[in-house]
Image 1 (cartoon, chains in turn yellow, orange, cyan):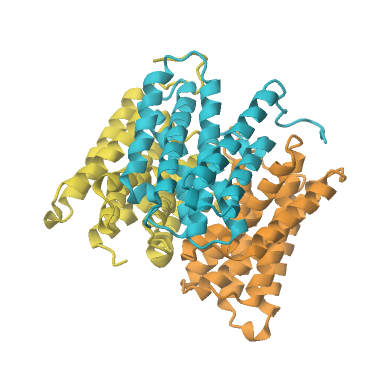
Image 2 (cartoon, one colour):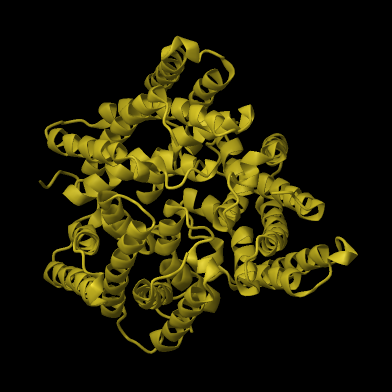
Length: 210
Length: 210
Length: 210
């Protein structure tokens, strides 16, 4: 329950990124008002961490035992509310912030799972689950098929970042390994998005494509 | 784990209201039989409380440790099953019962969160989560965008009721504060529904409206 | 936390069946690649057990404390990935595997709930929840109305199997009662599917049908 400052810092940055992301997605829906923006921002921001904490048995989840998570989630949602309506196109900020939240939560989720005694494989998977969790709940609330099912290079970078954190014995170097892992995941994800941008796969193609 | 009788009574009434609500929604789907009605009624009725109990670490949730919750949820679902097919229009009963469940669970959720040691802000938010939880799961199972995202005056009254329960130091007056808080939330919600009835916001407008 | 070998064996077979099922459903979506297949297979396979373990307070869930669950889920998903693209019609294998997972998880869920001290009614319901949980999450991720809401003879056989396990005092006979209960549930479910095959109910009929 004592939070490693490394974990906490990255976790709060991820919370902020996902809150911005979820709130901008809510704004793009156009008919959502401030409460809808706050709700979807907060759910996206704290969903992954709550899933992680329920899985490792750390209740109440950090979201509810440390006021900073909810404060940061609300702040991120409000920033998006103020800025979002002035932006013409929200697609790129939404994607970048989603990749940032994914990367940071994969790292912190894996880190916390190790601290709570889970085995390495389980910690890697739980790291990825933490990364994709908030976005998956966001997508399910908005009736989208979750990104993790649609895009190959969403879960794989998260798994890679989580694996780096779990397998490289390096916290003597402070933030070096987790930040590097998060940057690798983020870069990998963004390259995948940019290269795939004009070749989206159809959701329900009449025939198999493989 | 020892349940305050005030909490328990209001919790069971909320369970009954949400069970009726969820079951009537299932009946309105028209192709759902008795098991579908029972399932959706029960999920709506116990979903918020289960989320609350998982968050505060009270496992097994009250739903599974106190038989009365499941009995009341089943009873409410069956009453709806018998009455529902005789009602021509289900919209108003569904809305009223949803507002009742929302109000009661916001109060009991906040109350229980305080009892389990959460801070005031977290308890208020968790109260609102308890209130909107069952309906949100209901909506997600039925592929609706959850009400909490679509309607401003759904979460706000729940937050207000939870705040009253958390911040007014008054349980020496027995049911007075929680019942008053629930009534305020219920009235507020119903006024909002009635006034908005002919001005629904489009779900995915092509342009921003703010 | 010490796992009964009977429970464990049936639980792992159910995990395998649901992993195959979820992965084949993902393949039928046609635009899902290997990660989508692995994810949906694993979520379907471990979802019910995670819900069960969160409810009874056994955290981390068996999925994360015993490596065999994730290994079996990944194996089942990969087998489906290799075999699935060679099958012309996936409907029948998907249905059979879903019925198998439903049956086995209803039995093991009820069994484990009893071991953790839940009352008989709660254990029966939690058994059924374990059985329908993975498929329900699968359906919600894919924007389907969950089977449990649409088909009468989905939850009822699961409840029956769970009731047999909870109420018949027979573990001196080893696998006899749980395997019989699972077979009854499986047969019942398959008969229901085959007989209803050409009479699907409309999802949102304009008028009531009862």
